Image (cartoon, rainbow, N blue to C red; front, top):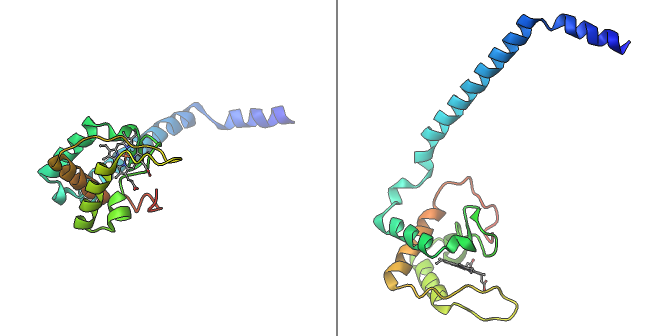
Length: 156
Ligand code: HEC
């Protein structure tokens, strides 16, 4: 009985049909890929907060890289899971207020390491005023990237 079903299926799927499925499927996948790629390229400029991409933000990114903040932190989900996500730290600790965030951030950087028992430690980086300010600008800019409200939790 089951052999008979298999035979019937072989009869029905002709060489021509399988070739059409192969070509049709390939064409469909290629068109889908091209369509989604064009959509991404079209959407990105609207979401990346380009207007606020100042010289200070770019310099802040360099300080971020040079000091390997991402070796402990994540930023928009990328990086290490030792320390808190910083893509939304402007909203979390600065309440989306630029001056409030900058003074919080300068204070935080100056206070490290906290040396509190049971708390993970962040090193002291001894950054100067400009570097701290540029880092803050970088974190403010990052928090304004349209990520579809990710992360969903302001604490993470
Ligand atoms: C060796 C690991 C490590 C590195 C490298 C590191 N951090 Fe941290 N960071 C931590 C830890 C751990 C905490 C949480 C500490 C706590 O809550 O007491 C933290 C917390 C923070 C916070 C506060 C986050 C919040 O939600 O309150 C900020 C801001 C911050 N780090 C910025 C930076 C910046 C900027 C750099 C790079 C210059 C950096 N960190 C590099 C370990 C690190």
